[in-house]
Length: 273
Image 1 (spheres, helix red, strand yellow):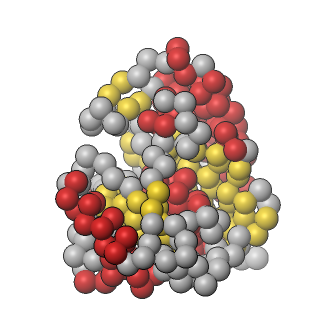
Image 2: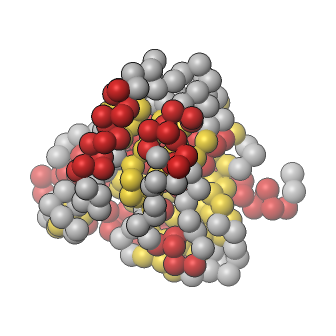
């Protein structure tokens, strides 16, 4: 193992431990969610609570202790620069709306970038006791079991995940859904993009598309999908682009061409916001 690969694996192991610890903290809040004060961010569907903030603070503290030279980008507190070439990208609770409404479709998502590329992806789903883990060149696992995508799954014999939010028009999302259904596919929306990307890596979904997502929502899942044998649309990470939104598309090998066509990715129709 090279020294660079060793550094990546060290961060993967730390991310696994932190994700489990953070998941326990989040789960405690979930079980007493009726006591939480919920705040609205961008719109009434975009909410936050003390749970999100305290979970992110825990992850920031643990990573800073272990790797003080690494950068850190979190949904709640933004970007802290580093000089190691590594940047942690974290959504403390992805799926806050399901979280506060008592649905189990939420997770802790941790990614690590190295020179702009996602080299670690760890997603913990506390309500289901699932830990997804991946690192560049090391494969992807779910609770220790190796994940390998089945190329025979397509949009026509499996389910695709679709996401939407207030950043995009209803018409644009409706067109994607219409084209997917017309192509013989079907879809679900769970309220957590990171979780649905983990499901792509696990073969539960054949792909996932959302016209506008942030890095903290997708990069952990992207690493998982790649290491399980899938494909993803690269997320722009140069300069301040890492803190902006962009289209997100990931797919298993049997659905890449169809989903690129349906979403307009193959024609360049979907532009970063």
